[in-house]
Image 1 (cartoon, rainbow, N blue to C red):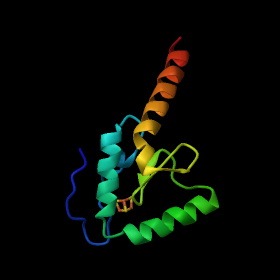
Image 2 (cartoon, helix red, strand yellow):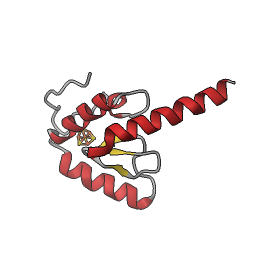
Image 3 (cartoon, protein in one colour):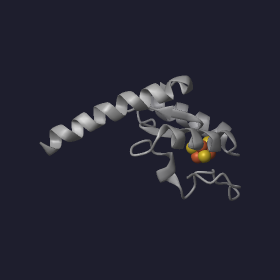
Image 4 (cartoon, rainbow, N blue to C red):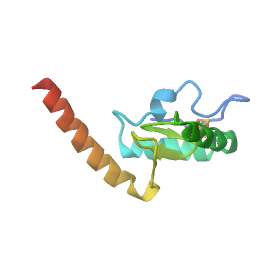
Amino acid sequence: MVPIGGAEPGKGLCAGKSRSWEMDGRTVVEWRRAISSCEACPLLAQCRIDAAASAERGDGPQRMIMAGNAYDSHGNIVDGERLGLYESLTTATRRRGNAEVAA
Ligand code: SF4
């Protein structure tokens, strides 16, 4: 669970809890919780600028929540309305990939 509490001065709500903003091994419910935390974060505006700048450089976020958005493994923003579908598709793909590795 991602606690939505106050941020320390100068720090985002994800500070010290970065695992909760990763998408691998977590559910769409947890992704949405992280997104909600971002939306309440005092650093959201700066974080959006940083996310856009890093994406433009080609080293943007992948498979994680940042600045209130979910980023896929290619660094593209996943439409918030389609997070459930994205979870279904990527979970099935990752299970298949793991089964092939284990076989
Ligand atoms: S807006 Fe940025 S700094 Fe704030 S919780 Fe989200 S990812 Fe962290």
